[in-house]
Length: 201
Image 1: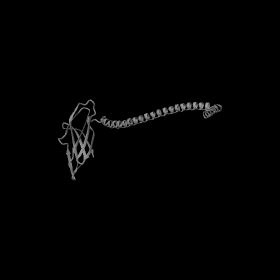
Image 2 (image 1 turned 45 degrees about the vertical axis):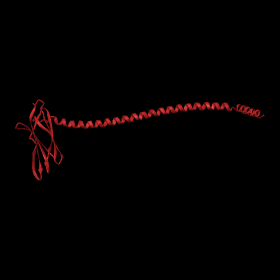
Image 3 (image 1 turned 90 degrees about the vertical axis):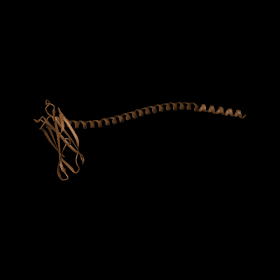
Image 4 (image 1 turned 135 degrees about the vertical axis):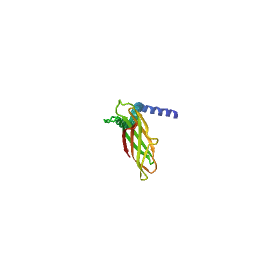
């Protein structure tokens, strides 16, 4: 009797579900939910792809900006170097004077209280001029312990040979308590003085 009653109750429940349409409605809703999940996954994957592409573009743009910054800094350094070279070659241009061999630049700077760096640029303004063979004489004048002081390059005048131009430089050891005020350069050809220039510190 209990089994028979249970069977009748189960049949009544299933029959009632069928009459109410609950089973078919649940299947339709489940199908719609599955379609919605598929659509949401597609939208998510599409959005993720766009985000990945945007991230790659931003990374590439940042790398490009850094590369351009490095190139810009290099161009600035090159421009400064060209400016220095331009100044040097401008000094090589003929001055328009009658003097063929001339001192175009004389510079000096103190490296310390006992050392002075000097630099001389000599050129021949005439392109057809023969090779120059002579000497460069430097004289340093100033004060030492309150008294007038003068000194020449150790070893005397330096040999000077060139065709178009020649740049010479060196470092002079200065005695203690000495203040150098002027540097005078002379270009000598035999006993003749071809050019003289003085630099004041």
